[in-house]
Image 1 (spheres, rainbow, N blue to C red):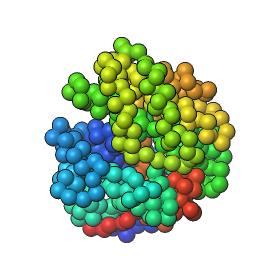
Image 2: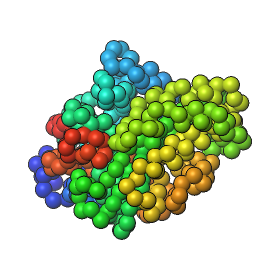
Image 3: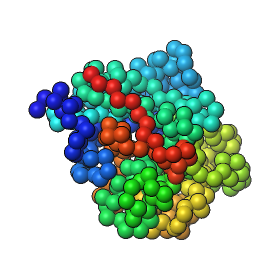
Image 4: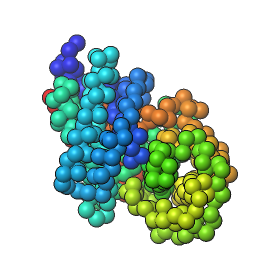
Length: 375
C-alpha cells in the first residue's frame, strides 16, 4: 500500500504513527513509532535520535524568549532541517507510517500573557515527506484559557493502562522543565473527571545544563558526577522554594527561563556546589508538587534525561513518600516517551478526540488541539 492510500485510512482502525519531540534541554530530536487507535496503545515501534550540533544549539538558543525576527526564523530553519534529516532516515526503513506528530521547538511559553510559540512548519514537513503531519498542538488549548502544557498526560494515562497499573501512579518527566502527571488508570478515559492531574513541578535539567555550558563548556552533568562532589547551599534552596510559583494551585506550567534567577542564586558557589544546589532545587520542586496529588501514588515513574542522574534520583528517593523508579521498570522507554506521546496525540487529533482537559492544563473544557497538514 502506498503512502497516498495510507493517508485515506488514517481515520479508521489502528494507526501507525511517528512522533517527534525536541525539548527545552536542547539535546536533540527524538522520534518514535507507535501503533494506536487513539485510545489504547497497541504496540511500540522503532525509535531514533539525532543530536543537535553545537551550532544548531547556538542558533536555536538565540531564539529563546523571542516571538519574531531573524533569530526566530533561523531557529525554525534549524529545527526543520534536523527533523527532516531524522525523518528521512526513519521512513526509509518504515514504509508503514501513516501519520506524523510534530511538536516543533518551544521558544516562548507564556500562556497567561502573550501565548506560546513552537517554531517549525508542519506543512513544510508534510510536503517534504508526502505524509500528513499534525502540529501546533498547544494553540487551541491556550485560546480556551488553558496553560497549553503539559501535553503528554493523555498518553501517560494510556501508558498506565498498557502497563496494567491498577491504582494511582505518577509519571515524572525530567527534561528541561519538570512535569508531573498523576494518573488513576481505573478511570476509562483521560478526559473524564478524576483520571488525571498534571502540571510543571519547576526547573529540571535546563539550569544545570546552562551552568555546565557556561562554566565548563559541557552540555550536561554526565552521571551527576559534578553534583556528587558538591554540597547543597540550603540558603539558596530556601530562596528558591519561596518563589510564588510553588504556592499556585495546579494545573500550571512554566517557560524554560522562568527561573533564570536560579543561576544567580548559585553564582558565588564553586562549580560542584552550584551544580549540587541546582540539582537539589529540581528535587525540591518535585517534593513540593507531590502535595497536590489527589491521592498518594503507588509509585513515581521517572522519564526524561533526569532519570540518568543518580544524584537527582537519590534526592527524589529521599524526599518523596513513595517509591521512585525509572519508567523502564514497567517496560517503557524513558528516552522516547515524549516522542511517543506526540505520535499518540497526532492520532487523537486525526480522530477528533480531545488532547487536554481541565485537569491537565486548566483549559475550560476538554479540547483537541493540533493542525493537520497534508502533502
